Every structure is written in structure tokens, then in C-alpha cells.
Length: 488
Image 1 (tube, rainbow, N blue to C red):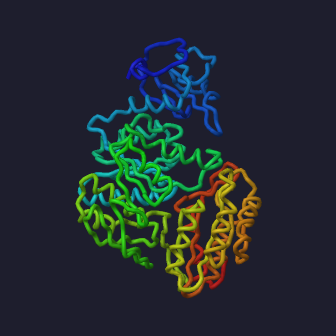
Image 2: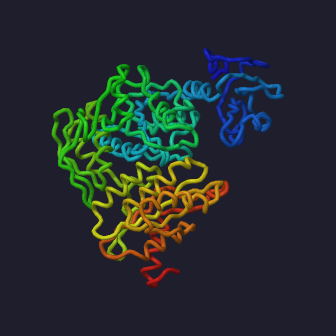
Image 3: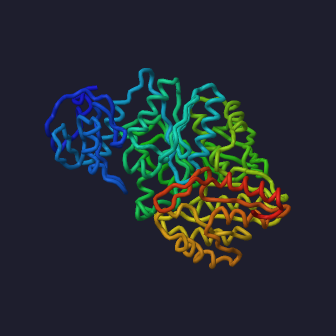
């Protein structure tokens, strides 16, 4: 595609050395540049793409889009907001050869991943080909793309959508993070539907205040961004969205009047059962994972499917047949008569809902292993500690992804909150050892949940991602304990 076609209508501050070259690829990573590429010099949180302009030119870049000039002789297009321009150009460049895939976006602090899995299962039960882009990566048909961000950068995002469309995918379900919304990674994409799960404290290291964080999430919903919105009527932010006259809204919930709601909820180790009223269509639902919060995820997905014309039978069977969502209330195995789970809960609200749900199926003691991430929202650390002390019978406070922070300092900040509600805890910095200790304490009727990392297969320490998995650590430790009777 000619450069002039790509930048047509784009607001520019200055254009230097313009040549209407044929662009073969677009990139924001100089390491992936090859001949006749367009390079976006993006300034991120840790790296500034402008420092890699010369490398990009050396590798074959024939044009650069940036917010400032560089001392190179190729075409330079200077813009005010390179990320916004990158999204628009990415959408133009990666056009599928066939019909465009219909995109459903999910906005919210918690529940996005599970809701995407449930909706995928329902739509597939009805006969659609479905892809998902989110925290666990992108997957469609037999393809899989490793996750880097909850919502990929705009180049990766639109390339994946193009590949999906070309591979026959009819619906793409996309997790929309607050960062992605703020950075306009999806450009001017028109969504078939936008789903809202909830809005609770998270990412205040980036957004500074909850009001700013909330406003960013709400900004995704506008007159032209989607055909309709599906909104949680029990969430305070959700109720603000419902009052927005700009968007056609479908509601779901348990406590407030809604188009789709549930009654007679029963949570057990085997899952959650309830009666769902979907626009007066009554369905008996079984979801094969426990937790009342999963009722909300089911209602959100069901309301969306109903609006898309999916039958009640497909909704019921789709929910029933959802395969295990990795790292989300994932049952690992039973050890010494105790059930062991892992979960991704890493916010105060997420942790509280997780522990409340597990408390309902715990016959004796509820054990918790958790920590908080480094270089992220520090304010939530004592809050999560207080919640853990309130609901767990015993906790082992450990590391999560300490990143560039001191692990002991993070743990001590969690402890401050824990002491407000309980003293039934210990601290073990090494996460694998913390899990080993927790497993050694278990007996018949207990429940252990290892929270915070979910399906992540790494632990990030001082800029390095070390191979690590809660799931594999639990399985390996149980195998050693079962073999020797003691920790090795």
C-alpha cells in the first residue's frame, strides 16, 4: 500500500523528505523491521522508540511516524499523537481479504476473561466460528498467539483481526483493558457490542485516581462505538452507563431490575446452578465452576447472545460445556482431603469475591497464598491484606511479580492491612516455598487457593521473567509430598 494512502486524512504537524513509497509492513519494534517498512517511533513507559530510529532505518524502514524529528534522510511524518495515528493506519493496512469479523468488546476490572470464554462457548454452540483476544492470548480455530498485553498494541490487534477474518472467524471477542482504551489501541473500530462487567480499584499507578480510571472505562461507550451495550446493573459505574442516552443498553444483574437476571442460586464444589430469566425466557443453568461472581459472567454472556439472536438451548448448552478457564477459579486437585485452586484475583474486589465464594464450599479451614505486584497500584496492598484477614482462616503472604520493587517492602505493606482484621498469617518471600508450606498444612475438608497470578507462566523480578507457574508448582509439590511424606 502506498504511503500516501496510509496517511490520507491523518492530521500531521510536519512532513519531511516525503516519498510516496510502497509500504510492505508496519512496525513499532525496530527488531522486526525489514525492507520497505513503516516504523512508528512510540514512546512507552520504559522505552522510547525514537532511540531506535537509526536501527529501524538500517534494517530497511523507508518512512517514520513520530512525535519529534530525527536526523535521518528518509520520510518523516511528525504527528501530535503517534499511538492514535498508529491505530488508524493499522486498521487501514490490515484489511482482511474477505468479510470483516464482527467484534465484541468486554470492558471491566474483573471477569473479562471468563466472560469471553463463556460467550465463545455459547456462540460456538449456535454454530459460529469464534476467536478471542485477551489476557491469555489470542486463539481462533487452530491458531494461537502468545499474550503480551490484555489488549495487544494496535498493530498486533488489527493484524490478528485480519488473520481471523481471513480464516473464517465470524465473531472476535476482545478484552478491552483501561490502558487500551486510554491509548486508543482499537482506533475507530465499530463494535458489534460492548460489554461492561464492573469497575473497582485497579491500575491507580497509571490512572492516579479512581475517577480517572472510571472515566476511561466509561469513555469506551459512546453513540458510535457500538450497536448496543450490555451492562451490569448492580455496579455503580454500570448504573451511570445505563443512564447514558447515547447507547442502546441491555442490563443484567442480581440485585437491581434487569433484562437478564438469576434466582435460586446454588454454589457447590461442582459449580453453580441457577434459574435465569432472559427477557422472560426461563432457563435452568449449570456452570461448571463455583463462585457467585460466575453467575454475573454467565448473565453478561447470555444477555449478549440473546441480543445476537442465539437460541435459549444454545445459551444453556454453551454455558454447561464451558471448558476450564485457565487460572480462573481453576481446580487443580485434591490433596490430603483438601481441594486446591488457583485464581487470578489481584484486586481488592476480586479477592473478596473469590474468598467469599470459596468460604461457601469450605467445610473446615480456608487457606490463602497471595501477594501483590510491584510497580503497580500500592494503595490496594493493605486493602487486600485486610480482606484476606477477614475471610481466610490462614494466609501465607508472599511475592507476586515484584518487578523492580523490594519484595519485603511489598509484603510489609500487605501486612499493614492484614493486622487490622487478623493475625492468622505468616510471610514467606519465595512463592514456591509459600505454596509448599500451605500444602503441608492441609487436612480433610480444607480449601487452599493460590491467588494473583492465575495462568501466568512466569515471575517477573528486576526486569527478568523467570519461568514459574502456580499450577505446576502445586502439582510438583504434591507429587513430592505424596512420594516422601515431607517437603524436599
